[in-house]
Length: 427
Image 1 (spheres, helix red, strand yellow):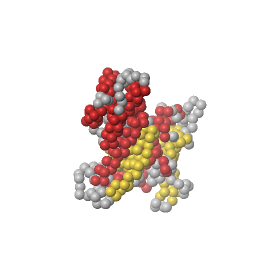
Image 2: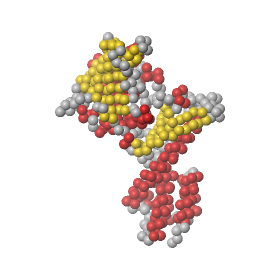
Image 3: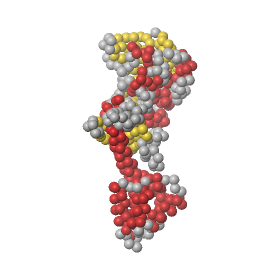
Image 4: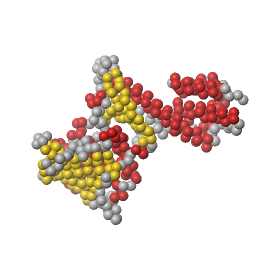
């Protein structure tokens, strides 16, 4: 049966749908994960000249409910997802545009889908077809009941243009999928979520420089308590322009995101933090008023404020760990190569002094990474030699560093230990 979309063909054409095949594939994959899929496979055949006549996106999700078809395929820009998602970088197919992304590289899309019909208590399988040349109509046909015993969707894109097999196997495409879905696969790794190409699982772990899971229980004055699962990720490369806390409900759907306070730290500390809790099931991020409801789910609630403090502490510690184990060593190598370091002799006392000076520079860098960023060679050399010239006056240098760096108690104790060590060195 042919059905009319609630908007015309030209409106679909100019509605902001991507023309990039990588983004288009991502939109269609997200549709599968949105439908509860745990495994999605991109499947295609190629010949000796790299030609592919079609590509399939196969998922084991809940399928497309025929009873709601007019509210999904028939309601462009008014998808069912719109009512369940307010501001989310997770549900990508919102407003019904995701399914039309195939027009970036294909003329026709055919969804062969199976869903469990609550009315008949049986699985129903049928096809939906949309042609790029006539996008304001879709056809649903070939309804069959009981032919399959599991839900899922097999989307076949045919009459491809502008793409070859290479487009779906090259490093740029694989890296795009890793960046787009790596975090989601990581959060769902205990449930063995998979994204595959021709049955081969995409390995995203090489993007992860560091990741750790924390459990935090937060209790407010009214004795309400909530558990939060916090996944910290440091990426090997920058995967976005900004770094965020992502707040996810119990279904792992993003309901809110907020910039971390480490977006201007001037070091390559590429990080994301994902926070999962049923606390966010009814979270109202638009509510900015301090209310009398102490356990209310909004950004002004005591629970949320305590959570932010806990998150900041985790990220601060992770940044220090990163600077100490990675960035600080890179800084020292850079300073040695540039010739900005003070000159040291070769006897044991000089070498010991050099080692202590390097440890002091590392400590300063860990506390305030920006102190050594953006300096030219002359400025670096002046800064380092001024620090070195004051090393024998430990008290004055310590006062100066504490006034400039504003260290916490632990950092202050570390500086004291270093100052004491340098003060013991004799001429």
